[in-house]
Length: 190
Ligand code: SF4
View (cartoon, rainbow, N blue to C red):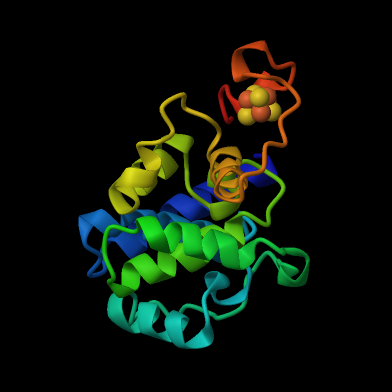
């Protein structure tokens, strides 16, 4: 069995264990991310990218019996100092969040941490497919997600929103339909 396949099997077992805890169905994304993080998949760093206080709150609320470690098994150390847009991303997501509840606050921190990864956003977050990221964004940031009418890749879409908010137009082509970079911004994220 390949090492990746083995990790995926471990993740599935762990996910099943987490899903037996008091996790509401609308937070299954959290179980997916935690299961991936717990076996070393994705880029989420220590505390899942949350503050230690948020992490403790999350564990106490939903996984009190799981003995979750605070450290990332992957050893991921994200360098937020090179993320000049961190505050802008937080503001963008906060502006469009559906609610003010703690879960939404956690999600914003986790999404921003995931944006520091090099892979597709859903993979870096430890979700199991792009569909789950789409659902998560539509559920929690409906008005923002609805703006992605052309099904742009999610990280590209978020960064494009930042550019537009600043009045920047960094694209070289007049429109996406004639752009040589089209495959980088659209198309399957697998
Ligand atoms: S496809 Fe080209 S024009 Fe459209 S967002 Fe991407 S880089 Fe910009």
